[in-house]
Length: 348
Image 1 (cartoon, rainbow, N blue to C red):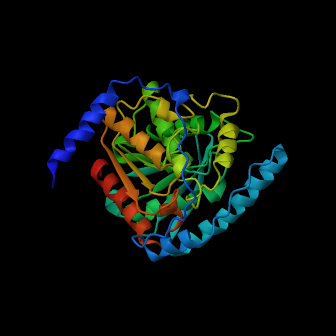
Image 2 (cartoon, rainbow, N blue to C red; image 1 turned 90 degrees about the vertical axis):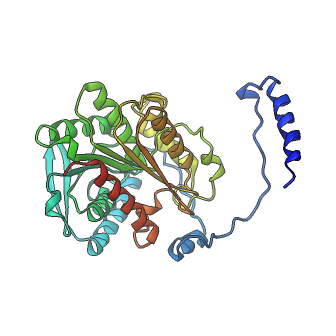
Image 3 (spheres, one colour; image 1 turned 60 degrees about the vertical axis):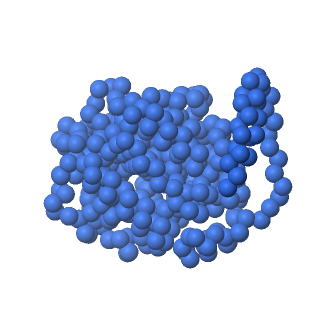
């Protein structure tokens, strides 16, 4: 190796460092040539097959309120059927109850470990804050209950268009405050994916401000922690993500949830809030995830605040695919990581 060649680039870098940096508004976007991205052979056959399929681009939200509700109901009906099918593979007892006036689902897996009876995992579902209400919310709750062998309580929080922000956050706070009156928070976790991951982070910031005992651990899967479209992979992974196929549609849901509030409000976009004093947190994303950068930014904010934070990034996975492709080995690995993380940080 010719080490003398290192001197020239270092000198050039030093000289460049003396030049004034352009203002952000003056920075030019980088144009890249059209190119074909091959299917990686480093992922499981299940993921390879999904990547090889053509992407179906999401339709934008309709403008009419009744049409929005109709579209949401159709998506939720399909997801309810998927959850019913999932329960045949991962059996669990589902019970509906009310806590603090909010409907919740108690998911008790058939493989529940009696030694973990003190533990309670509290779930807030994803779906861009508008989708997967009711029974459709339970895909992630069922999988986490199975892999952790622990009871999960899933919060069926209110959603737009009828109930924009802060309804979802208020419902989550109300349920948690009620639960910690009768459960040991050292044996409790809070978790969710996508919008559920963002809501998990926002809820902890709110609970800390209120002086309410915090969970002992968090799982924020590919969290939608910033509802403004301003981070790297929302551009670099556009057209590669098999799940979030339209950034315009994501923007529609962001505005629907915000309901006129600023997207910079930490209650809506917790990336703009304070992460000091957070519980140990595990984050999961994939290399084709539109929200990979958002997950990375959240991880850096946690680490900068001195929080124990594990970041798991899976090769080739799109947004939340560890949750959607339960038959893939990547899914078992992801939820195995979550189970091990909770086991390390939750009291028995």
